[in-house]
Image (tube, rainbow, N blue to C red; front, side):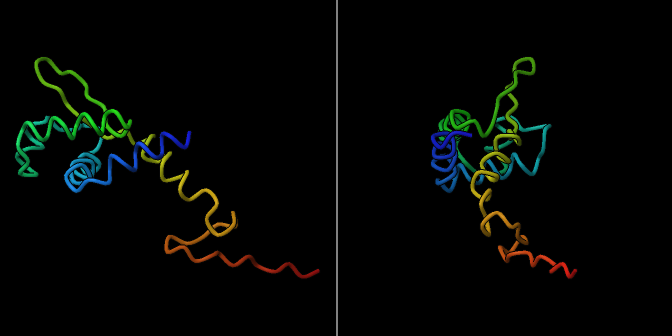
Length: 111
């Protein structure tokens, strides 16, 4: 993943409402939600929601799919995982670590 892609994703998530929208879509999973469902669940006005959905889409974090007359937005899990991998790929100097960031102790081999 390119550094510019990471910057776009993190910039998109750096707004409270966009982070809430993205998290709601992650929780929902691949089925996604319509903009009106998101507005109702998150108490965000439709015009504002449209702007936030566009920003998240431009960052590659969500994708709209047309279903008849509706757009259904879902999280792009591969892109999200790519961002997470980029941020953690050299964690603990590549030795591996626990979810808390503590280095995993390698067992000493005795010969």
